[in-house]
Every structure is written in C-alpha cells, then in structure tokens.
Amino acid sequence: MQNHTSKSKPFTQLRALAQQDARFWVVGVIFLLIYMVDRLSKMWALSNLVDRRISVVPWVELTLVSNEKFAYLSLPAWFSIIVTVVVMVVIAGFARSEFRRGQRLAPSLIFLVLLGAWSNLLDRLRFGGVVDFISVNRWSVFNLSDVYIVVGVICLLLFLPKSNTADDSDKSAPVPRVDFDTKS
Image (cartoon, rainbow, N blue to C red; front, side, top):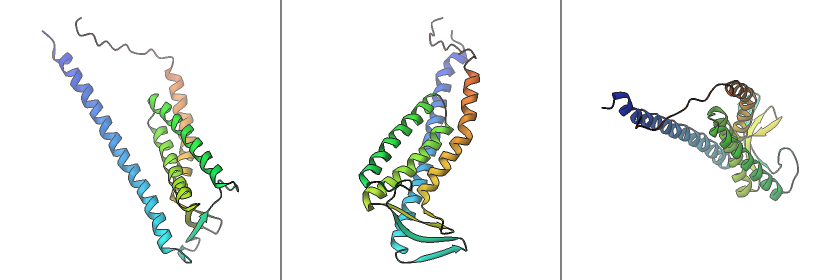
C-alpha cells in the first residue's frame, strides 16, 4: 500500500510547473505591453511631432528627431545594424545562461534591454534612424526604448553582483538527491 504523500508528489510537481508557466505568461504579457507602449509612442511622435514641439514641463519637451548615430558614434548604418544584432545575440545567450542557473531577475532585466534594442533596431531598418522624441533640457533626445535599455543595465549593475555572491556561497552546500524510483 502506498502512502498518501507518494501519490500527491506528482500533482505537487505539476502544480508547481503550472504556477511557473502562469508566471511566465504574466511576465510575457507585461513585456508585450511595455513593447507596445514604446512602439505606439513612436507612431504617435511620427504622426504628431513633425515640425512641432510640445512643452510638457519647463525642462521636458516632445520633439521629433531621427537619430542616425549609434551610441553617439557616426558609423555606417549597415555597421550599426550588424553590431546591434551581434550584441543582442550575446546578451540573449547571457540571459539564457542566467535563466538556466535559476536566476529570474537578471533574465528579466536583460530581456528589458533586448526589448529596447530590438525596437530601436526596427526603427533603423524601417526609417534609417531611431525615432527619438523626448527632449530633456535640450541635452539629449531619446525614446522609451532608450529608457528600457538604461533602466535594465543600471538594475543589472545594482542587483547582479548581489545575486552572484549569493550563488557563490551556495556552491559549498550539498545538492539534495532526488529519487524518482518508486519501487523502494
């Protein structure tokens, strides 16, 4: 006769997988919404800011600028596209390795950076430059994708060292053995 806990173990594992799957979809929908806000804001800027400035507060204006430069460098368009794709592939590989290590925050932040890079890449391919429209103190003009990239990188720099040191301390801990043999 089997005890009650051995029968419920597969159901507990299935429930845990379902909860992980649900969290994955919730996070996916959140990122899709973030991406759509960026794309829609750029479409709005292209439709409403041609030869026009809108003052939001004294130090913030909305003004349309096509940014053909790549990270403040004057590089050929084809080169900046290739560099963007290569960097995105490397970053995606890093996110994948962090996810496989059990990290959740780092891959999410990396995905935020990739989302911003992807949207700016689409602008370069479609319009020949990135659609920028948020001007702060006339110092810089940027878009929401740039905000996603900067926020993602800053959060990674703040949180990633803490998560890596926690992982290093756990390496000395013994790994529990999982026995799937139900005959014994």
